[in-house]
Image 1 (cartoon, rainbow, N blue to C red):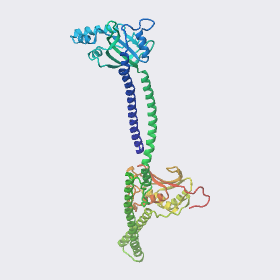
Image 2 (image 1 turned 90 degrees about the vertical axis):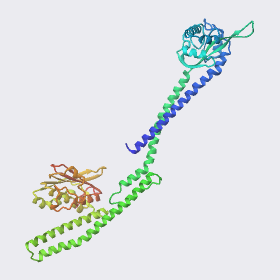
Image 3 (image 1 turned 45 degrees about the vertical axis):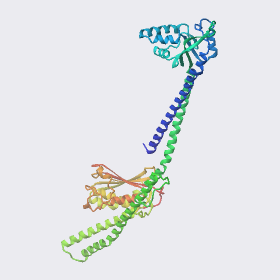
Image 4 (image 1 turned 60 degrees about the vertical axis):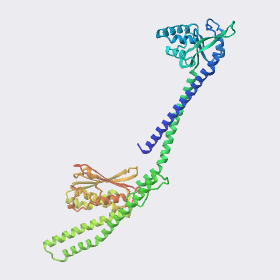
Length: 520
């Protein structure tokens, strides 16, 4: 995964987590707020209003018409679910009975259960499905009448489905009428249940949850797109540095990568790269200068040595041993001259001053001339040279290209090949450019894979096929690559041990299309 992909994924995951946390917090706050307001309403205003009414025991649903108490509850609390269960005789007596032994407490609970089932007053709750408390909940209410009990349970109204309901229950004294003799309020202990359906609240929360889900998905896409754009903007200076660095090579070390004014690590990286390029440029320039200067300085004495050796061979009468020594001196001097010329060519190539005389070139004609020129050498080694392929014209320096092909054919012959084929054909480049591929194939011993990557290194030899005894300096392939690079082409080997070697040279066609005139 790319750095931009990793940054986008990181920001997306982070924003997703934040959105999820925000959604959970919002839903939790809304739920607590809505249900909290219902609880506040039940145990506060609504419960107080119910306990201030006059409620008569046994005044529940008895026939087709509601009783006065039930009508009063339905009229005053139409949106609430009310259940009143009268107890006997008083709260103090009930509490006293519950303080006895476990057996007495169980008898009292059984007695209270029977009283609860005797004609409770229900409003909004069907008689067949009343709210029922457990023994623990009932004991909790009886032991501390001032404290209520909040619970969420399902309640069912007549001809309706059960719905979740928030219920508040408290043991209290309710007014049941007036004493005619004493003219005082008559009260009786009762368990008062007051509740409100949570179905509307849950529906609201479900709609809010769906809305949050839609917003979350939309936010996820928006955040992903935003993260992708932001990461792209953050990495844009780094990509500019990367593109500039990829274009810098040994021939343009004077170029520098752009330094974005971002005041961050990318700017520091670009500055470090430029300082490194400056050091490399100085080192390469010193190396090129040394190679060029040394080659120039060596050319004169080596030429003098070769000239004097030739003079002594021609104008004197040396002995057989002296003639052999002079011949070796002249041969080695000529070898040094070729080496110095190769070093100068490489120095010029490294300095970017290799001059190409571009003109139209027909590859088959060029390789035919090379085959005729090298035919005596091939016949001396019992080898055959063949030229095949289509004559696709290209623009290049024929002398330099001839130098490349001659080097490749000479290497094939030195490797002991008996058949060397020179071919050309139209071919596309790596980026689809129109070009021509020149190939030199032989039936030699082949080259092991570990050597292929280093064949273009200077002074590198594959000992089995590139012997010093055959006069090679180890610079021919390096020069060939520099010439191909100057033509903006590429050169590569395809070889397998025991199955020969093919060297491919791809060159762009340049401005040449079709030729009708004589070309090199």
